[in-house]
Length: 160
Image (cartoon, rainbow, N blue to C red):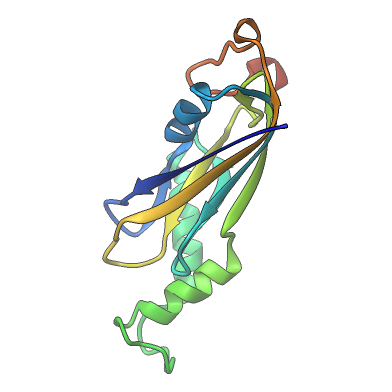
């Protein structure tokens, strides 16, 4: 059993979704684990992680709009507002989404579906650097079995 771990620092340009699939796949391509499980974990409570469609950006904007309506940032009456009116709403959005993802790895590639990407979901209006931990556990592979495409996923395993 082999293990590898690293941290990525990602800063969104704005509140909302930022795709990080390429950064994750690039790190994975340099590792020796061929088959295993990748855990992606964000070390924050006011941002989260999602696996979501990465082809049509309308999906991402609709998700952002939905959460803004579900958890408004003004006239909320929340007690916790130490860092501004978006502080507690950001924590609620984080609680409704995910702080970690588990993604299977086969032949050194993320086993994401054809239209799936890994996203940082920044819930604060003023984005800040976010630390994302990648932890890979699995079996060592031979270099000849690793042939990642540009996303790091295996197109033969993709869903429609």
